[in-house]
Structures are given as structure tokens and as C-alpha cells.
Amino acid sequence: MRKIAFGYSTRCNIKCSHCVAADERPFHTKMELARARGIIGEMALAGVTGISFTAGEPFIYFDDLLELVALCREKNIYTRIVTNSFWAKTPEITRELLGRLRQCGLGELRLSYSRWHQHHVPRKMVLHAARGCMAAGIAYFVSFVTDFSEEDDSFEQFLRDHGLKFFPEPVIYAGRADAIGRSAILTDYQDNRCAMNPYLAPDLNMYACCDAGSHFNTTNFFLLGNLKDHSLDQLFARSENHPLYTCIRHMGITNIASFAGIKSREIVTYRKCELCKKLFDSPETLKMLGKVAQTELPKWIR
Image (cartoon, rainbow, N blue to C red; front, side, top):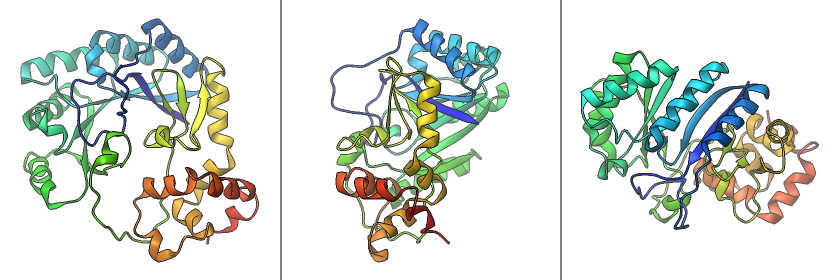
């Protein structure tokens, strides 16, 4: 089953200090609407069954979004939109916008929420968006981005007090978030498998990972290619058949790190995406792992 994060535009209405998608370029990139429609048609032919509209803030181009969601319904593709809820200024506005999206076939909203988001978007707007989804019959969940510090307790309590469905999401220290101070951690010694849903950027580059994958700038390990040069089916096949990607999905980052010689007591001091970058954004380590990805490495598992 193929799913993908679809970056229609990098433009956002706010500038959060924890944003993994941000970079230092002073301009925004956006697909042409006709090109996006064509790509969705290609995705349907390639067997894509789910699209998550993301990148910048999708609601900025609301009319385009309506058209793309409706096209996905026509192609039997489930749709999710990732949003910061800036548009949910009142319950009335929220009902109107979500009603239109529901008519077009939207399946789900993923509501971004954190102490960084809420510097720019009042918490009540996230509440409006969640309640609007419930009223419209649209599935939703709140993506609560956190570094698990005490500063986030009141933000979590707000979600609990209002009975909202939420899932904590660890900060990924890439993009603008790379400048955020990190507290020392000791994690459990867990597999750290990653589903690795691909991400299509507005410049038509496609990455095998939709989180920090576009920020592995030394090796470009997760870059699959560009739709100007390859078909969508070819890029999906690269993601699905790459030996090291297969190890990440089935073995997990922790077992790969252990095989690579990183001590156990060091492994538990890394967050998942940081450990992944240590392994795969190092040319030397990547070369070593690539040589054994189909021989010794897959055996390093119980």
C-alpha cells in the first residue's frame, strides 16, 4: 500500500522555531495547480492509496486544496491535511471551511500544536478545528510536538481538559529546529523502526522519508530523484527496493547502529532521527553499511 506526503507549497503563514521543513532560502516554492493534478493522476496509476497534504501551510491555497482533495476522491485516494489551524478563527468560519472540504471528500485533519506553534496561533483555534471536524464528520487528531520538558505540561493539559485526541510527536532537530537547545536524554534500548513514508517536495524532488530525510545534506541518502527525470512508479520502486531502507523498516535504526559499532550506552543517548543522521549522513558509515545491506547486516537481529 503506497502512501505519500504531498508538499504543494513551502509557503507558511507563521515561522515556528521548531520547524523541520524550514530552510534558509528567502523564497517559497509552489507547484503549478495543473502539474499537481497531473501528479495525483500518476499517483493513482502507481497505486497510491493515501495522500497527506503538507510542507508549508496547505490552507493558504484553499481553493486549490479543494480541487486537489476532490480529485483524490475521484481517484479513490484517501486524503489528510496537515495544518496549524490559523484559519479556524471562529466556530462559524471553521464550520464553513470544513463543510466545503467534507463535500470534496476530505478524510482527516492532522492539527499541528506545540508551544512553538501557539506563539502564533491561539490554542482556541486548534480547539475550533478539532470540534469542527467532529461536527463535520471528518476524522482528526492533534499532533502535539514536544521536547518532553515541563514547559509543555500546560499545553498537554489543555488538550486533556478539552477531551481532544492527541499524540505526542518528538521534536525533530532538523531545519529551523536544529538551532533549538537539546536536553540530554536516555532512551529505552528499542528497535526504532521507521515506516518511511515518502515525501514529494514542491520542486518535485522525492525523498524516501518525510521527516528529516531532506536534511541529510552530506550524502543525500534519502533523495530518490526528481519527477522531471523519473516516473513516480520508478521513484516508489527505489524506495521499496533499496536494501538499506528495507533494513531501517524491518530491523530498526538501533540494530543498525549496534552493527555499525556504536556502543549501547551511546545509542540510548540519541533521538531516533539524530541516530539515523549519524549513521546515514556519514559517507564512511554509509559506504560500509551499503556493502553489507544484503548480507551480514540483516542478520543482526533476534
